[in-house]
Image (tube, rainbow, N blue to C red; front, side, top):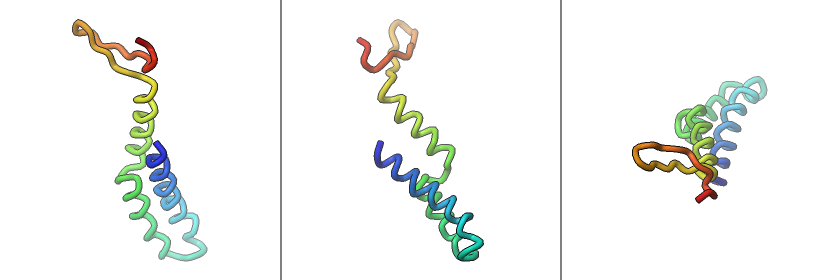
Length: 77
């Protein structure tokens, strides 16, 4: 979880920094865009979905019995 959040911080920080620093440092800051995309593994939306999946994996568990699947709390037995 910490690695996932770290990658998000670096990725979104680089993407935002590329545009916020544009008036100060010029077009050179646009080199931060590829860094941000690599940190997010190509897609900010996919990173957010991955975060939601990581969080739900700790709280929910899929249980299939008799051809019927349900989501149950990870702590429930």
